[in-house]
Image 1 (tube, rainbow, N blue to C red):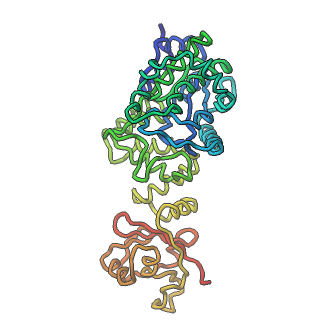
Image 2: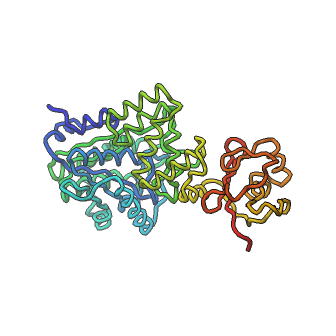
Image 3: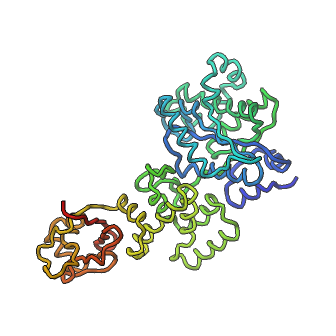
Length: 435
């Protein structure tokens, strides 16, 4: 039996955790249609969903058809897998809105035209039309309670309590596989390893009802090198929605990847070649301080999710704040981004300039006032002390008390001033004319 191109790709990237016995042979025999489900209980996917998305991407790249199923129907219930308590139920209007947002995010990864163009479907199209008696008669009869109780997603919740609503989720997901097999000839399902029980239940239902041979592939659940759950930051989950997680914060999440994880994440989340990734592995081993793998990772994933312009701006901001970049080189877009990420204030040009010499028309602002209005100093007295101690930087240059005025020629684009106190405390101030 030959090994399929897809299986080879998934194996070397570390994306293959489990598969059913006939999966490799089926993939070797020609193009198949495979689906992955996405839960619309939130208004955005997060980086934890990227592994499943990349499975669909690799399917499409090797000539197979990828189908993204948005759970507009099952999202009204919620999947108990991996949960310690029952989810709150969302209103249908909320689920519909979330489903639309998820569809737009998936379009960043999948191509929807051509012979192997991806499809997006919503299980609300069939589940919301399915009657309770019809469901119990045509689906429920194929599963024993003992079979369902043996699944990890159910067993793990029995002591804490599991409602009938969540208990039925497995059957609804199984019914999705059946409907997709009927409607679109789907014979594969892919997803995270925590979905194995639900996915194999779908295989069983398709076999019993349609007599079709179907397969399942799962990817591992990703953790960091420290054993922590992947996809969390100090601020919480990292979302694909730029409103919930800004492109800069998204970029910075990847830049902060531990050296021990960088190579794995390049394999999981990018389409860089084996040669490119192995070269980056070698660079990390020899010169970890260059963070070449993290930069490549952040650029690639941020570009994919937010576009090249937003990735460029995010990298400008990151380089400035963490790698000693030149403030004078910041683009207007990067300055606008900084206004959202660090303390920002506006100040009238002539505030605090009473002590400036009248013969110095090129004076734009008093640093004491800038430090106070930006919040980097609580008072002018504290600002004066900071300047004397040499702990203040204006547009990247250290300033002392003898250089307490900012000149017009020193202003950044659109009359901005970038302040820094110590090593890491930044603020941005924009000067405007008197009212």
